[in-house]
Image (cartoon, rainbow, N blue to C red):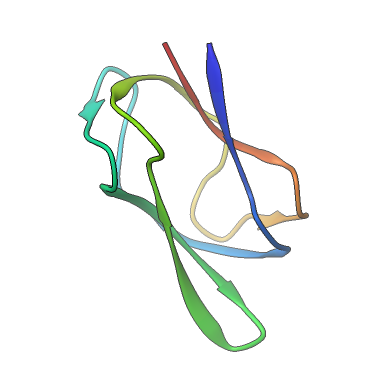
Length: 70
């Protein structure tokens, strides 16, 4: 399993995938707000979402796991 981790601390604005969704490389899968900027989180590769570990409004620290892929 591969994990997508937060690249910086911030608040989750939205999560654009659900468990079982297939994603393509470069696909936007979530968006964080950090230092009043919206930061898109893009998939690094292809895969299927196994688990979404965050919800809208959650605060995450750098390195926290956002999404787990099969």
